[in-house]
Image (cartoon, rainbow, N blue to C red; front, side, top):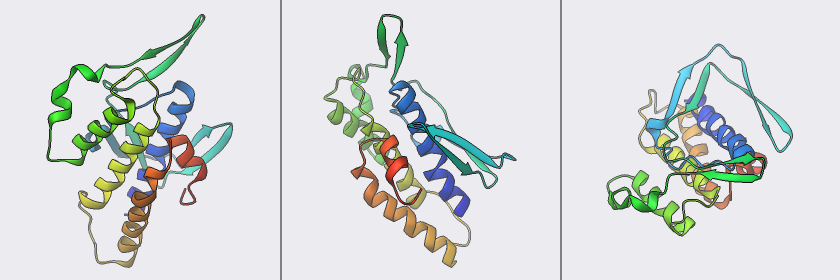
Length: 180
């Protein structure tokens, strides 16, 4: 449980923060099928955010984000920059689905962006981090759920879930949250 907890809040959050800062990146579809957890022999991962180096202990587990088909990023070009994005305003079915918090996140993103998907709005990454933490609490199957350590980390995840929506971006979250 502690390794999954650490990866959920570190690898994913730091990965989003680095991309947010470098490319004005938003994943926009970070449901739990797009977070891969795998074993690793790598002892540490290094992330640089706002010029500060963060060395994160791996504990034998690594997380990777996949499927960027709904993502948004800015590219720096000689004459300025260009936004690469998928105009989700054209896909009403994405916003009509029900039954999982994932579908509510799509609607929350649409509202935050005013349905203008070209805009950079890093809060969408916070919405997906909130979703990820929610899934870690409500949907993952754990062994030994009656242990003190399990209860401790579930409590920490609930604390994160209760405050993460107060952050404006993944960058702000990783730089200022006391739990990281």
